[in-house]
Image 1: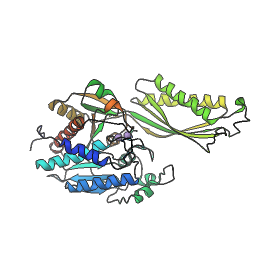
Image 2: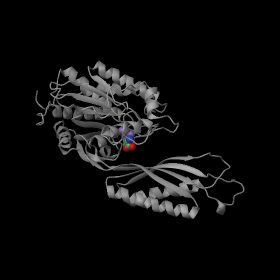
Image 3: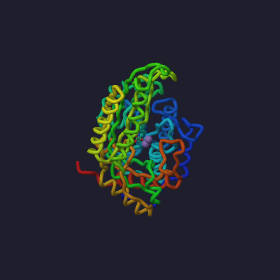
Image 4: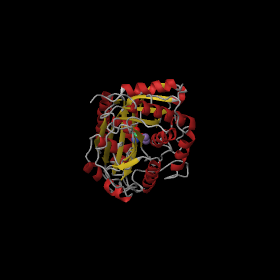
Length: 419
Ligand code: HGY
Ligand code: MN
Ligand code: MN
């Protein structure tokens, strides 16, 4: 069969039905999903995914970090599979599309090839990567980073959440049993479909984002230490108020990011007062920072300016402020050949499209270090994501899945690379 069959399409209604069906696992009253990685809700959707893949004739394996690999045989099983997929875990205020669209569209592609009786030369693979979100366990895109060798199994299994539960314990709690070693699963190329999670495609009336790469990310953990004392008897000038320090830091984060705009973004997303009490001046606050920009040098500059601002706040307010960079992901370019394929298929299907860089991190940003990788974006309403109101349309999801189908088939039927 030829490399590309432009008349080949997914069953958009079936894809949409699976998105709605699986949104029940961790459904929130506001219509979103709260399905943190390796919770019972995540375990339930993983069981659903395994059963659905097996019903579609795929062989499902699980690695030591719980990542699920669903394999569709090809005529030439000596070739490395062409992979797709994304993640099924969500943020606490997650929506029904972030990660879920790419994973379920992968299943839909396999189901559509089954319906059409098509066997590809190379095998195909659908992947559900563990803990893409990084909300319960840092860093984000954790399992795909370990798959490409950035972390060891032991390091990841020992990481704990805010309740002190380790990744290993959480995997056991959902009954995840490894059938293969981390990093041993062959992948010849990786294509990830995802909602844009930003406003550009919708604003420009484009259906397909041809993603050329991912921006850089830096994550920080910090603590501000002041001095607890009586809220009623401590005069304002004598206070060493950790929350006052945090308030100033939050404004400095915003000011510094804006100064490097428009691409730079920075977020103080978590803050916890140790032993909070209405009538005690906070003495200790822990916080987290997320800083991003497509330019590595700008990430460096923002970090330096943050540290300078922290030194000034600490000195003036007689606080101790520690800032620890716990993760740095460099900006990553995707494979020009596959990017071109996504673009040419969007062209061939008459779908309005544009090239762009991803503001969000994705497992594809890790895979790109090891295998030819690219991404396909579709719009989401008002660019909203990591919010329960996250929304996309059936037609855009179907269009993205069609491009995924065409791209995967082209790659799987391409002439075998010389040994
Ligand atoms: O943080 C991110 O960019 C991704 O949504 N985990
Ligand atoms: Mn995602
Ligand atoms: Mn996300």
